[in-house]
Every structure is written in C-alpha cells, then in structure tokens.
Length: 150
Image (cartoon, rainbow, N blue to C red; front, side, top):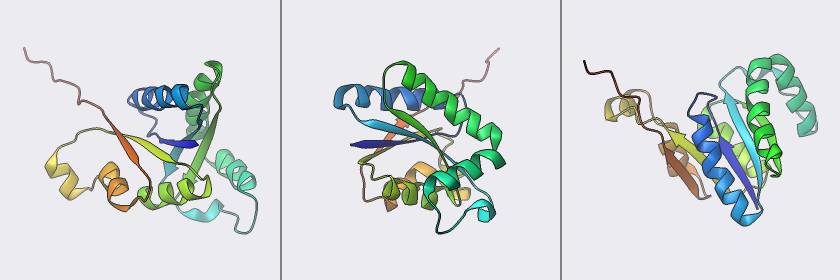
C-alpha cells in the first residue's frame, strides 16, 4: 500500500507527517510526500514519464521541492520508504489525480481549523478531499495557535 501525505510546508506539516509515519510503521507502506502548487500548468510535459515532469516542476519551484524533499528525507532517515512529490493545479483535483496515478490506498492531510466562516468563503481543502475522494482520507487536526491573553 502507498500513502499520499499532502502537506502545505507550514510548521503543521510535521504533525501530518508523524501521523502518516505511524501508519507506515505499522503497515510497511510507502509514503509520497505531496505538495500541491496552485499554478499555471505550463511546466507540465504531457505524454512524458512522471519523473520528467517531477524534475521540471522541481527546477521551477526549488523552495517547494526542498521542503518536500526535507520531509521525505526525515522519513527515509527513520528507515521508511518515502519520496517527495510535487503537483500543479487546483488543490483537491491535483491531489486526487496524483493519488490515482501513484496508486495510493490512503490520503493523509492536516486541517488548520480556520473556522466555519473561512471554510464558507475560501473552502476547505480537507473537506473537499473527503467529499470527492474514493479513497480513505485521514484528517489530522492542527490546532490554531492560541493568542496571548495578557
């Protein structure tokens, strides 16, 4: 089984990675650490192997590539099979497309708990995955930082 871990490269990504690591430890699953870049798909090379596309995306978005590579390397250092992965396009659609292409059995994602108003106005990535995915989706709750109450 493969696990797709979708991260936004914020500090919360470590918590999402840890949840996936726990499952991979128990199951022996391979992990793809995915970051979706909502960008023009101009660097996609249609009809080529996915590795070629990954190389081109990595060159065009070096900071994002470094971020997912660092997270994947941490898992590799712990003896897990992990690979960094970048995708371009609308978040939910791009994630589901990659999940299908990579033949994963589980998607792991975090939620920042922005609140109902944010979700109505902006939309919720994790809720979109839950609604549209044919695969199980594990949502890791990420608490909002508390404001200093002085």
